[in-house]
Length: 362
Image (cartoon, rainbow, N blue to C red; front, side, top):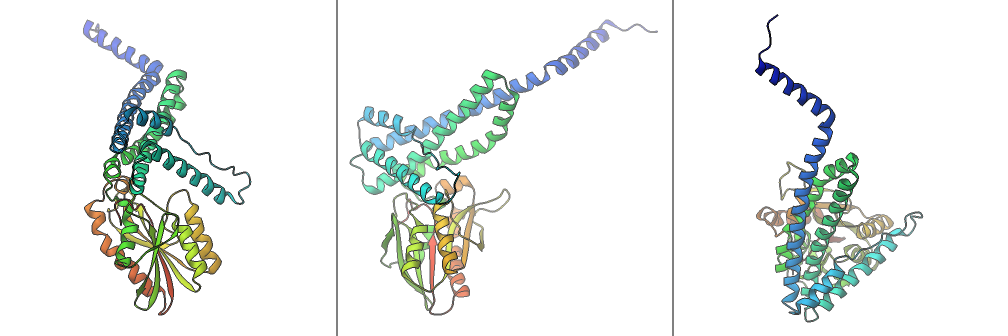
């Protein structure tokens, strides 16, 4: 039998050590590398959070130059929270949720007004939008940091894997929030404003009146159909209460034959931004309170619900309006008109609700 050369013996020994090392320490090595990747993402989140806070502070200080007051007030505001209503007995939970959300929004805007007492109402609305983006990034960072430190403290593979699985989704949301900062700070229209923009195109020069909190309406004629067009009040960053507005209009005006909602909708990977699709139901996001109101009143009076959605990514919805989304406005408006003509009779009444954020939209 031929003797092994010394080099071959060394290589064979190294190979055996590598196999045994991988067998006994492979999982630890994998977890170590995963924790390093998570730490990098956490540092990225922290940079986004600090950038958001700096933009919010700078925007408020344009109205109130007292830096110490502004920074101290933001420390308290950024840790605000809302507790969801108990769901053990679901009856009436929507109205409880609405009350809690209204209280939260009122407290947030009151906090902004205290920090910027000279700000106009439109500026307060825009600062509130900027605050919500900053608050979102602030909370994402704290949650990811919590699980990162727990995983580091306990060396729990399950905690690390859970965080690793959810991190891509969290980072995608964080990037969307971060992309919205400039638009909110400058008061520019965003992708989510596509619904109100369609409503504005329908209303044109008609006089609007407030029908619900931060929500306006105008009556127009579309080839013999009386159409009540609803949108949030601009040009400040509002989403209004479109569900409440639709409910009140239907209560006051009998024989409504159709409700059409127009909104931005999240596209799937591979779909084209600005693509317009139609369907049934109420196209309205958020916690569900306003959608519930539309669905309830439509069911009570037997009114069909038609939805028109302009597809976009979450980042496009929250950041300044892109050419693709802006280019879809004309077609979306034409789709609304063709839907009214196709699904309602001459002399009937229709409600059209342009759903979305009216920042930069009159």
